[in-house]
Image 1 (cartoon, rainbow, N blue to C red):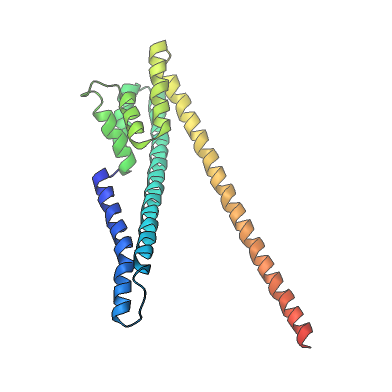
Image 2: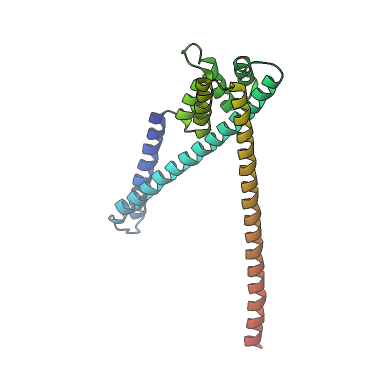
Length: 214
C-alpha cells in the first residue's frame, strides 16, 4: 500500500543510520579520551546496518500480513452482505457496488474502487477484484475470480457461487479465530507453568540454603 521508492528511501536511511551511527559514537568516545580502536567502528556499523535492514524488512512483512488479513476480513463481510442483498431479490450486478459503497475502512474502499472502475475499464467486477488480489497477494480474491469466471463459462448460477464462497470464507474465519484462541490458551497455560516452576524453585532453594546455613 505504499510506493516502492518511498520504502526503498526509508530502507536506505535506516541502513545509513546503522552504518554511520557506531562510527560517530566511536569518534565521540575517542574525543572524550576513551581510546576506542577505530577498526571497531566499521565492524559495528556494518552489523548495525544489517540489523536495521532486517528489522525494516520484518516490519514491512508484518504490516503486509496485517493488511492482507484486514482485506480478507472485509471481503468475507462484503460477500455475506452481498448474499443477504441477493436473498432479498437484488441481482449481483446491483448488490456488488452498493454493498462495497456502504462499508468503512481502507479495505472496503479498495473493494469499492475496484468494482466502481470495472465497467469503465471493460472488466467484470470479479476480474477487477482479482487484480486487487494480485496487487495485494490475497489468494481469496484470486480464487473468487476463478470461481466466478468458471461459473460464467459453464453457465452455473453466479448467485450460488457467491453463496458458497461466502460460506467457505466464513468457516475459514471461524477456524482461524479458534486457532488464535487455542494459541492464546496454550500461551497462558505455559506462562502459568513457568510461574509455578519459578515459585517451586524459589521455595526449594530457600529450604536448601536454610539447611546449609543451619
